[in-house]
Image (cartoon, rainbow, N blue to C red; front, side, top):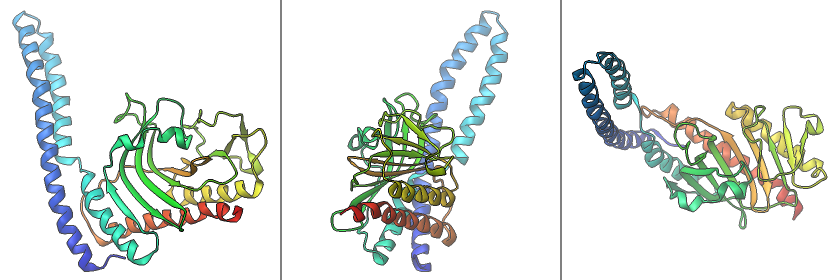
Length: 296
């Protein structure tokens, strides 16, 4: 766990990075504002010159909306980069001193390295892409490596405004002899996974969990019940019903919904929350690995 001295050092670096990022946000907002307002103003002036006063009313209404949006973005939007660039590396460093996971951290990795991630994980239908904000890699045993990603899944046209999924995806690079797709999402954002087989509802009495099987028969009951209990644990801990566990030939995947991390300031309680959150995910990894160990 991070001590007071580490928190103080972290706070100074976080504030320095945040100030730098906020200047970038204000600058980009100003550029966007003038790129929009300059030609728009010229267009309205031309309309008024032609005697159409309605243009003036439209101009005033849109100007108020655009100006309000620009002010909110410039002064209230908090950059995520300091959290991933400053806070998480120090948390990873602290966890490496306490555990044997051999964690490594990458902030804003190249999205080209994750082309085809959705298809490998079998999470969504076609044409869904991944944008990764952070990658944490490690191993829980000699042969079992993993990667934890903060990311969004989206269509090419909905990258920012309407992502299909925003949260955490944990990939354990260890296959088990059971291929399945389970989701606790009642509203089913995962309606058409790549594991395109008939859906089995209410398996083993879990009425809120849908099971997609890659085979015509149900997977092993003990294995499914193990992952269903894990799904319930994640759902309760993360306070979300959007939890999915998938087993494919490329490994085991755990995905859960989580909002963006926008920290305004650093204090011990906030950092402790992020620390415990990541530590809990490492615990889920050990439970993800259990059926694979038993099958060996």
